[in-house]
Structures are given as structure tokens and as C-alpha cells.
Image (cartoon, rainbow, N blue to C red; front, top):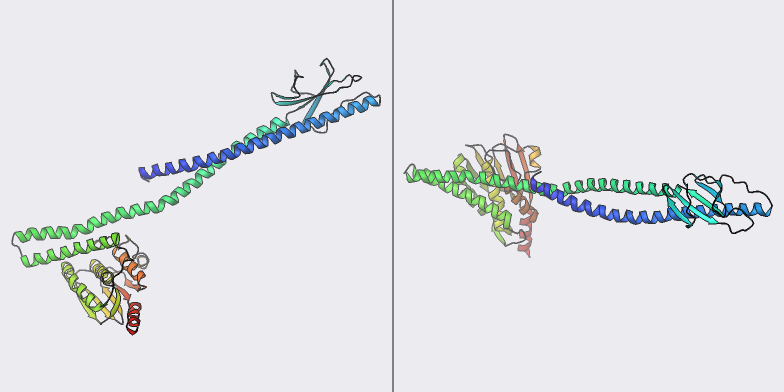
Length: 396
């Protein structure tokens, strides 16, 4: 991962994780305040109920002229103490209070909550009932821990998901950049050969060495450069939806292309042999030329030196057969993808067959490949669908 990708990944994660955690933090803050209020209300209600219960028992004992005997409350989390009107302790189960603030009805001190109620009976010595509990604070602390753990786990989960999402989002971009880098390198390599041959031939031509042969090399190199430029221009700028449909004989077009590429194949001493039947089709002639040119160009690149290329049209099917390195079964599944190229020192930069496939898909033309490694390959282009359309148009 390069510096720019790391920067983009960090920026994405910072914004994504930061905003997500902020949103979850706000939600947890609201949840915490609501739960805290519930905890306080529950604690207050429990202490108030306990106070009312003790007060009731004290009054009942007084009415029955019996001494009130303090006992442990049913709720083990609650403890209480009894005070007289001078705020002296009569009885106490309290654990956390050395001093009680009688000016408040309910307050919190250290780790305890206190609830104070008064008994307004002149004939009863008990004046104040103090209820103590640590349950409310314990519940609040547990709530804090729960909220913090939830926030931390959410941050970890969101960060992990954000990282996966960023990797998924960056993957096609990274692949595209790698393909483009590879395409630029391959294009430079592809152009280097004909340019080098062209410059060498011009230099030798100036010195008067074998001018006829040098002119052939110059013509071959010029056509190679032209073919490369046309492919790049068509792939980058041509809109497949733009059509100039016309009626023409595929035989004438293929014959012209074979003659054109004879000047290129001469550098490898490859002969192009044709056996062509008439095949009138209705489509964009430039795109048909692209199909034929790229297939013949590919055949030259991947053919062995001193071999031949067979170009045939029979029963509306164009076949181009070479005798070269061949294509493995695995490569046959990917050769029509952009920037995919055969494993061969002859070069190529992986857009020729992509152009062929895109045009064939546009016109519903069937394309198939037969190949054996180290023996050769044959490409079949079935123009029957276009010929049938042409015939129907003629009948109309």
C-alpha cells in the first residue's frame, strides 16, 4: 500500500469511525441519563416504601402499647436507623454514616444514599427514620461500566468494519491503477520495438545500405505504430453507441487487412494466406475493421518466426489461425479482459482482444477460441446474425 493509499485509508477511517462513534456516543449518553433517572427513581421508591413500612410498624406497636422491636428489613440492600427528636441514635443498622444531615430528605454521601423521614407523633420517642442503601450507587457504577464497555466494543467493531469496507472500496481502484501502470509500461515496450526498427532503418537508409529492405522495415514499423495508436485511440475515445452502419462485403475488408499486415509480418518472415468467400454484412465498417485488424495483429505477435497465418471466410464465419505459442485453458478465460495479455516476449498491451469482444457483444456476434499450447490458436468470428439481418432488410 503506497503513501497516497494509506492517507486515503486513514482519512476514510477517521471520518467513518469518528462520526459513527460520535453518533453512538450521543445515543449512549441519552441512554445513560434515562437509565440513571430510572435507577434514582427506583432507589428513592424503595427507600420511601421501606420508611413507610417501618413507620407503620412503629405506630401499630404504639397503638397496641407494645415496645417496638427493630428487625432487619426484607430487602437486604436497605438498612435503617431510628433517632429521637434531639437527633440522638435510638437504634441503628447503618454502615456508612457517622453523621446524618437531617436538613435534607434524600442525599448521597460517599458510597451510600440516605433517605430521611420524620414521625410526627408526640407520644412516640422515635422522631426520625433514616434509610441507607448502596444499591443505587452500585447500579449507577455498573451502568457506567456497561456504557464504557459498549462504547469501546462499538469503536472496535466499527473500526474493523470500516477497515474492511475501505479495503473493499480501494481494491478496484488499486487494481485499476495497477492495470494502468502495467498498460503504460507495456505500451512503452510495445512502441519501443517499431520505433527502434524505424530509427535503425532510417539510419541505414541514409548510409545507402540495402534501401529496398530498409524501406520495407520502415513501412512495417510505421504501420505497427499506426495500429497501436488506432487501438489506444479507439479504446480510450470511441463510443460504441456511435454507429455508421453500412452494407459491405467482409471479403474485401479482410483482403485489404491481410495485404496491409503483410508489410508488418515480414519482420518475422510470416506469410498471411487467405481463402475468402463472399460475405455481405450490415454493420459499422470501422468496427468490423477493428475486429479483423486486431485478430490478425495478435496472430502475428504470437506466431513463431518463419510460420504462416491462415485467414478464411466460410459460411459467414471468419477464422484466423496462427502457429505459435498457443493459449492455455486458464488464459482462454481471461484474454478478452482489458489489459490482459499473453505471456510472450513479443509484447502487446492487452486492449486488442478487449476491443474485439466489446464490438462482438454490441452486435451479438459469436466469438470462440480453439488453442493448444506450443501449437497455435484459432479465433472464430460468426457473422451469421448480421448477415441474417442484412437479408431481412433486403427482403423488406
